[in-house]
Image 1 (tube, helix red, strand yellow):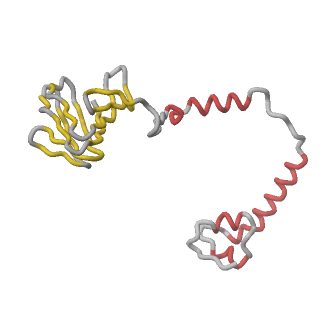
Image 2 (cartoon, rainbow, N blue to C red):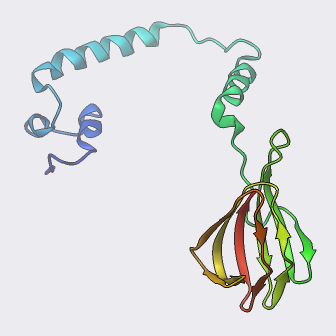
Image 3 (cartoon, rainbow, N blue to C red):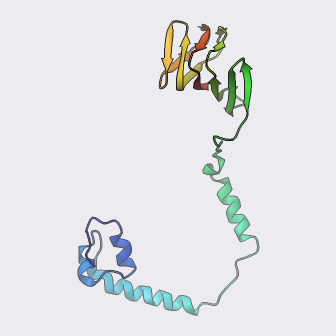
Amino acid sequence: MTTDPSNEMLPILDRLGALDPAERVEVPGTRPDRAEPARAEEELTLGLASLAPGAEPPQGLFAAIEAEIDALPQAHIETLRADEGEWTKRYDKVWKKLLSADKESGRSIYLLRCEPDAVIPAHAHDHLEQAFVIEGELRVGGSLLKAGDFQIARPGSIHPEIRTPTGCLILVHV
């Protein structure tokens, strides 16, 4: 077997015994001089393990392990798939899909889908609103926003009428 010393698989191949002694020398980060004592120790451990009697895990062990895993922070990650959630009508030709809402702060993140020629009336903002245009384009007052553009409306601001000749999809965080 010819080996490339930069191959990340070499330590694994060496541990599996798939490398001959000459190749083992080429594996970065290994100690070929300790290979035989390590193998002897591994054989002893495997031999001792084979002498131990088999045992069934205690009742409820797996449920307890799963409960611990569920309690980890990553267990609090939620996923909303593209085909999940509900689109609700906001105005004529304007649809909203709520992605996330925080009841404590009142903040939310949603998608706004506007069909071509949709109009959103002028409105005041009593809270910060951040909007990212994902696709299409829209005219906000005298500004034309296109895919990739971002806009912030600060509390107390007045949003002029919004029109979209092409239709658009916007990610909004309020």
